[in-house]
Length: 270
Ligand code: 0WE
Figure 1 (cartoon, rainbow, N blue to C red):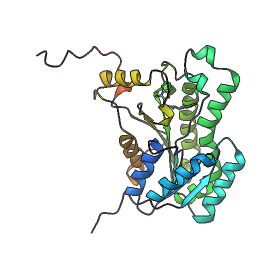
Figure 2: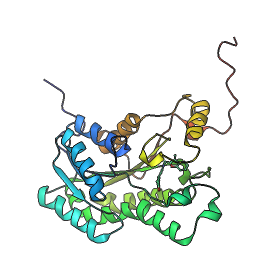
Figure 3: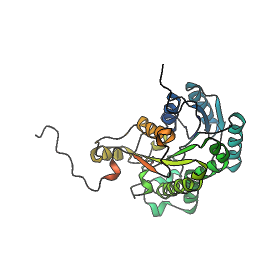
Figure 4: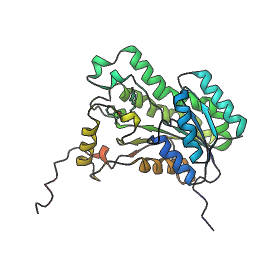
């Protein structure tokens, strides 16, 4: 007899798949492997075809459009899910956006009001908006919500710029949602992932250099994989984490705990 999966029979909605390299897709695959039934949303018809193809790989035909910057879209998504399922056990939120011009050069010079508004709307409010719309379904399941964050929420670093404040708002929103919805049995957590080469990271100036720096500095002396992010998200979304809410769990090979690090001696030097 096979052991039941960690999320066997649970109903899961994954928001934020953009390609086969997306962290959202890695989480979806881990959930499918562990027995969940999946639904996906996508933004824009161009991504619709891609996401439908990926969804079919994990046996899902529930694929709905949703531009998370539009309340009508979020409401329509919640109605579509409610039309199929009487509860939602799992919500995965893996969405972020800032104007490309805001993600290079200096923070002060590149953060105008509109870049700040858009980054916070798409990257932080979208979690609150989705949870608001899905609240009855999540409460019916005593569901679990996971979002993805990044170190820029807590530390200043090059080029991440306005996404830093947006992720800080996202992590604070995780705590306030966890506080507010805990009495309904709903848990809300974040995974703060180290850099992974996804579409969201493609074309970021100096991304290769950041990966090299992490690989030289992190306690594990390497960067992390999408599968490692997915397994941590799976843990938080499963019953194994039934006592965890409002947390930000770092999956970064230990990078964020380092205060100072000297270079390793060249290999073979003794
Ligand atoms: O949160 C992110 C990236 C999110 C993101 C990516 C893009 C690229 C395309 C938000 N908005 C846009 N807008 C676009 O036009 N990450 C954690 C990945 C990332 O992005 C960086 C990083 C890392 C790591 C940007 C600068 C420095 C480091």
